[in-house]
Image 1 (tube, rainbow, N blue to C red):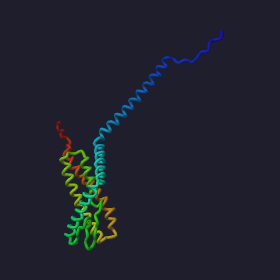
Image 2 (image 1 turned 135 degrees about the vertical axis):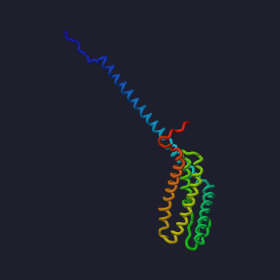
Image 3 (image 1 turned 90 degrees about the vertical axis):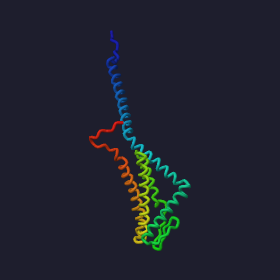
Image 4 (image 1 turned 180 degrees about the vertical axis):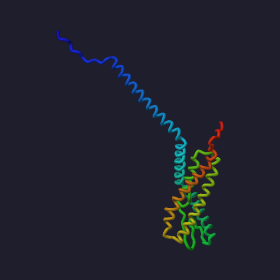
Length: 218
């Protein structure tokens, strides 16, 4: 009698091994996903102070730039501050015998005149400095003197800038715009950054624990 054709069949053991291999792969993929998520969580936790500083700094600077479009700031506060810069600069120049007078936001003398406009008032570098101080994770007790001293020093530096531009216009007139735009503007940003770094060092120096010193118990 002719035999019956034999079909191909899979052994039960082979099927179980395949299913076990698939399950192991799935568990491995799930473990890798959990490990990646845990690693990301740890990284975010470690970077949380930096991320908090950056976010708060952006919020504060956005608030500042938003205030510059408010009528009270644009039409009253800013012009008043620029007039004060003109008056203070005229006083300093008169110490050197220039016979300068302040007319609104302009400093006028027989030899040269400068007009103080927005961007020549040190408000933006001061805002950068204040925002960086406020966003930094330090005590309010250390922030207040930092803000007061830093903004005062930047204001004095700005008066120095105005006086230097006045004499640049007299003796090196062709270099006036270069000194005004290409020198003093980046210098002011760098100074604001340097002042913030110095303040941050001062505000955190007491937190430094010397090697071998036991940490204080909470």
